[in-house]
Image 1 (cartoon, protein in one colour):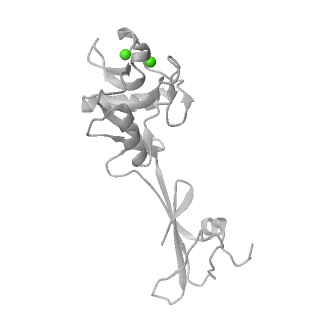
Image 2: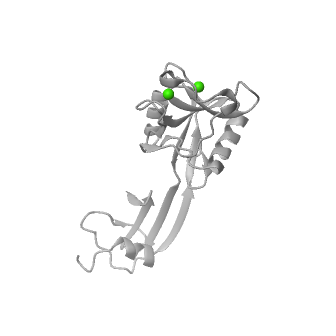
Amino acid sequence: MDSNEITFDDVINNCRRDIITSCPKDSVRYGNSCYYFSTNTATWYDAERACFIRGGHLAIVESKQEDLFLINEVTKKKTNFWLDGTDEKVEGRWIWSSIQQGVSYTNWDKLDGEPDGKTGQNCLGIYKSSKGNYYKWYDLKCSPRKMNFICESKLQLHIYCFIQCEKVVTLHQNSMFSTHNNGLCGCDCIMCSMQFGFLTTLF
Ligand SMILES: [Ca+2]
Ligand SMILES: [Ca+2]
């Protein structure tokens, strides 16, 4: 590598930088994820697609804490929501569809005998119990049933780096970095933005 090239480490270690974490305005943060509670309803399949288009996936629930957070939000919204779980491929073997991994933590409404749908109900939702005024996990018919849905995406991590003008700036061969004239000091300055652990946005 040319010694004049700027590496990612150079930028992180030597530049003035601002690190900002954020969720989209219509999402709620919990831990390192952003959760979007849809205002429209869709079949499980369409919900899965809608979340993918948003840059995420239907919500994956990996801990009791995360479940409590989601159920608390769902209870406030007083409606049912799809999650990412499915046992469509192998009846009774629940997996998180977007990562193709087994469901370990569960919160079925045991009082209502869930999951009870056998091959007729293969999609997972947080659903209002028929046994009381609370929400728990139900297996449900994926389609044509339409419900609201929860999308989950990674917390957006933006690292804005500013290389001072006196620094020698050259382009990295793979174009990870770009230079531009800031119009003020008449020399090349660089600003990069890091999202999801990868440099994606150049200014
Ligand atoms: Ca099933
Ligand atoms: Ca069921």
